[in-house]
Image (cartoon, rainbow, N blue to C red; front, side, top):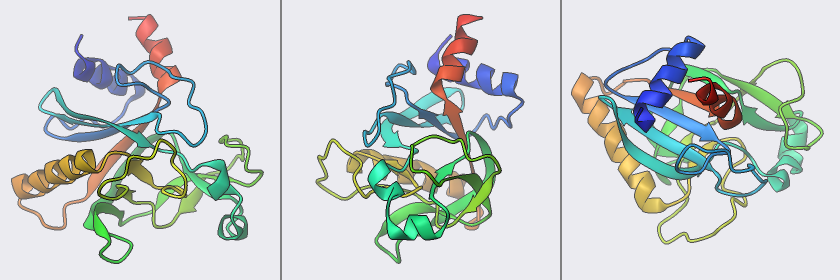
Length: 204
């Protein structure tokens, strides 16, 4: 199976919504071949993928996780811990907009997004009940960014590492908006645990 076929088959197995025309999928702790990579803290070791009509048209390094520095900030502590988006599907939660008041184009949160508050800052989703996140955007870094660590770029957002790949991502999202003819179009996204995906793949 191709990468796209594997991902779609896995999502069908999980009972997730499948949109043959356009899907945004994040793999947490994966290399570009969708293999588990250890998922160390503060590294760009997650993936942002776009699948269009059965083809992976974007496979870009990203992070779905805040790093431990962000987890220990005063702001995070006031909220009960830094936000970590839940594994699974988040439907109609983002639309085209600007990250941080016109900083750059992004998919901005437009509906409740659920996840975990890492109260003890240990980097794991072990706090029980799901909680809401606020300002959980899908954004980029900045033009010319070449850093190898996430740093302060994510305190809960889904962030692409390479600026040019983020621009590609935004262009694909804009094309989707134009295809459906709805400037208020709301995007779904799926966050996949790569270790779970790998276990499933072994059974195929």
